[in-house]
Length: 224
Image (cartoon, rainbow, N blue to C red; front, side, top):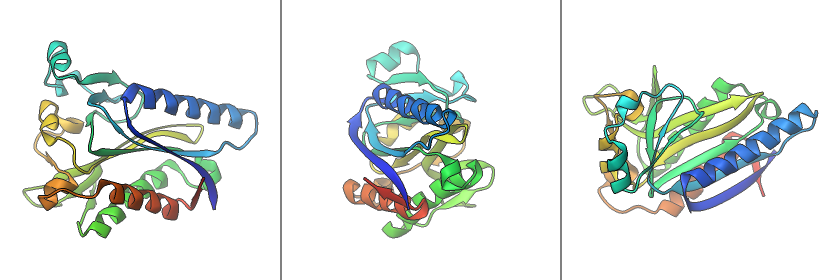
């Protein structure tokens, strides 16, 4: 088992969590450059309302101007993860693995596959069937139907086999706030949440604990 520092930040502003990520990421890289083994970290949180633009994002996929963002109290950040634009907010579970993939013995492709599997297994536990879709990032419901919809987004950064950023899993966010962006630049696909699929309130804490347990199992982590 690989020791991992589990950090549950609760509801936190995006910039604060981003700074924490960068601190741990940079510390891990510095340790590797000194031929030392960094510890793995898993940050779990929810964010106050924010849109983030990844490295391949186009500003045209944001449908609000600066004044409208201010009126709605939504932050905006350009960040270093891959991918386009996405939304984070209360009711959405966000997980940031700061892992040393060399110690885990996996590459970036397997890392992303494992993250996807953590989400798929968590949804299966809830009785929701979800899948990967070739050529699209994230986890989807209704594959190959007219109602394909995304329930989780994934976007990462990796340098010297150290990772940051991660996944955003829609448990019970305000889905209306996705209407002000073109999520991941995809025009014709919807966004959903666990609450939306069930049509009722769900146990966010239980879902969070299930997802954390899947990370422990799939990545062979021992949390402390």
